[in-house]
Image (cartoon, rainbow, N blue to C red):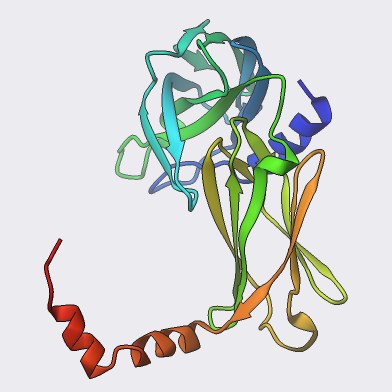
Length: 270
């Protein structure tokens, strides 16, 4: 395990930790760490569940496998049968101002592999004024990895565009290798400044598309000219290609002449 890499990855992931909650305000509940990246087909870890509130909380753990789309949407499913997970506890109660520790051991026939352990918090602190119970869900994500990580030759920036109309930058990164990688930071380079955007995991044989909204209108000195994708051991750099989405749309419309439209309507339908 690479301590510096994990520390940075956990810090970035913690800032993007998500929760599902409605209808009430809650005391701070914490899961530490948010991410474990462990080497081997059999791994062991420890999760800390912290109740900073003033009332007891009930917690139920539910492991799930997941898939991440090219645009970053996460789809969950029951834990894959190839992943064997042992938890020291699957449900427990945390007293106020206390921490509860859960130990786990996971194994899989091959790596990389990944799954999430969801903690569902319920208790008096999560009741609405109408007496309804709601849940706070916090994830702990486990990546089981081989010793080797993704190589620079396996990662490619296949798209780096400045969309002037939408005032955003679109970056598409492709991983052609068999190993998992983590982009710690995406950086937009201007003539006199830099702008730091989020990182993201990049899975084997997959692409990831990231859209970065610009804080200021892309004009004058506020036009980014290059994008840098930074990993632990290397970075990729690519000049930005500028286009206007309105112009592109207009060009596409003008290409549909009456003759062309008629031709498209004919012929055999596949």
